[in-house]
Image (cartoon, rainbow, N blue to C red; front, top):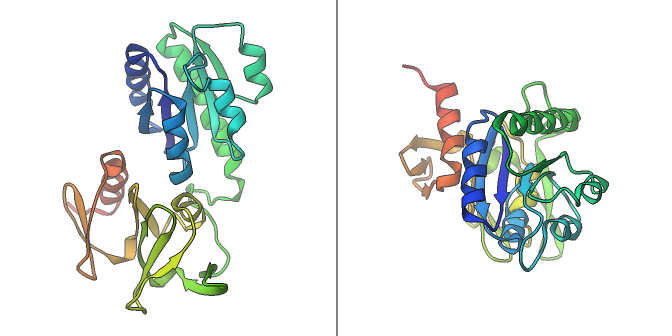
Length: 242
């Protein structure tokens, strides 16, 4: 699945964009925004692969938004203005759609993004999961490097300026100044799943799944965010015996 967001300051246009996205089976709409500033906050916390973006918006324009990012996801520009096309393609956007956009034209743009997404996964396994050498990583904690085994992580909690890593072999969590997004990008997909903007869990420590929460084997119950429920449902469907 390609995780995406939509940004447009016009409510009707944003609603139409959301409807189009939901008709493309390989897209997962994580969130939608009426301005680029709020979207910036999400990009710092969550791994987003693709952004559908309007250009003419108050405050921060779409092109300024792209230029402000050091690490950029893929972009598909959706605008009422043709005149920015050259500047958009100079910023390496995937496609440039002029409103009103037909569904077939929208899907063609999405297909281009999917092809680029698959191409960029050169370091991934054939089933789309990231490869990792070894079974541990090191993080900076209190001026030292602490070794953390993937298999010992029960869950990770993201707070304002740092994260807590709860381990099966330690009663106290490891606390580090590390963003949730950077951790999510590094964790093996086969072992971990983000279920909320503040929580990443180990699949190995799931005890049971409810409609809006997950119970872990250490008796911790964590909420499932609305934007992450599809991920849980997909995991359950793949492993469920009827």
